[in-house]
Length: 528
View 1 (cartoon, rainbow, N blue to C red):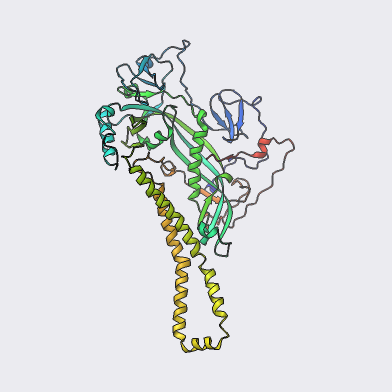
View 2: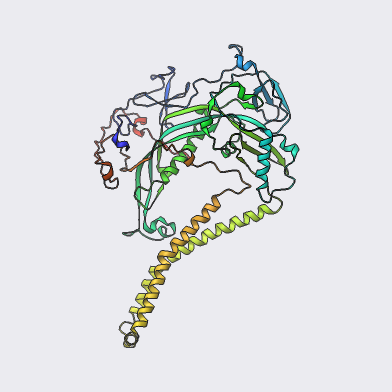
């Protein structure tokens, strides 16, 4: 069912004249009665105490970046829980990492820096995860998976690893915030038709009837599901993202038994503390979804600087996800590796044997130069029609020459054959060959974007976190991003033409007492 078949009465309030004026001193959080403030990056009123997000017009809750049951400090004012009495906290004197385990688990190395300088103390803070994905295999299996991965990497130094080094591998449950949210993007970008999809053409030529570029505005709605963010500062965000994805079908309620024999980190960052990091990733996924929407053009290129996003109905789960960590110091450089404790995926940056890194860099540089030559050649080929006009004018200058005309009369078939051959050559050169070269360039760029076996795995794409049960809704709008609920009229869905449909919108009356917030609207600029 299309979104316009079930319109909502308050879907964002863009351009609405019913927006109320809020201030941190006069409006309170419906959850905890703390002051509410408006933050443009969230596009909503936010409570800094509980993390609740509320619609500025109605104060209806649209999501939360807070945790319902935050951990408490054992400062003498609260009793140690029975579950926590059976746990201990291990602190690394080198990097300061704090990990939690049961009393029967011994540790000799830090999971993050590999240091043996560890001290044990009583828990200083509650340990209250909601969900957990249990480890699927033990340390021996994790070491075996790492060795198998290393065996597939070409040009790896022979003395890079040893049994003694691999014995430092440590199983750790990582505190993770799993975020799901509905996304609404007011996207702006260039809609390209014909040859304008090729920058080698668009940079050199003006628009024509069949080849043109148009600034286009649209609205795209979809949902992202179960995007994970680690809540531990000691874990490199890029390294943890390389371990994704996890299978959330195996997510279960936390029980202390799952912790036996493993370590677990306590979160030190709430979602509210890392909204920039969260939104940057979600914005990147949102831009990728918009890039897949063509709005009826041959190609649509979204512009992040001109686009705005809004996230509604966030859902956050706090879970512990299983990972094996290994830290190796080689040739004066410390390398960190992660093995997904559920799927067995191995990732990290691996060193090259002497001389091979230079060889690989040279190969990549040659491919990049090939891309540049490819674009330059296409730009030249697109000039063939201009060359054809010059040639025709040259021959036209002989049209009154009797000898020249006599040659054409005496050799009509040869002249026709030469003309057809030249025309075919020009058509292939100006129309077919540029497309072939552009496809080749795409393959070269894809190859350059792929990570080497020595590089850390790429961050997962949006296809892993797009919620297929919430289909994409996309339509072209006016420059002012007219909302669905403020005047659009639709015919039958199968006959609806978003390219020609015109909105019928009443212009809102501008209030004299409107605040700057009301004038700016509810949108937020994309983060990159």
